[in-house]
Length: 107
Figure: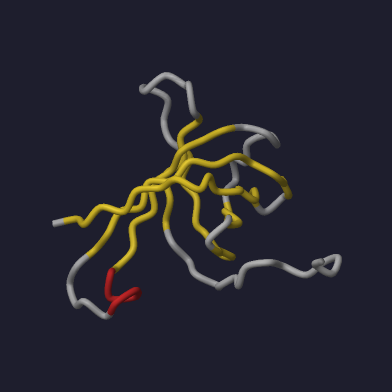
């Protein structure tokens, strides 16, 4: 049994740029620009001046250096993730990730 207030997954302070799009929204809609600050395997907090309402389903792309993950110099990866907003504050929004995601190498 987990103690109240204790997190299941280790969180990391990692600033990654993200482009967030609402699921089902027209492709022409401009994505929301955000930056992660607190991230784990199950979710992240995104700083943005355009937070979405709790329950909004979205997909987003994060781009990070594989050097950060495996110390492979000069290579990058794109991570495509779906999730939903679980909390909103003045600074941004917390998003819970779906379990399915895709990691693709970038040239």
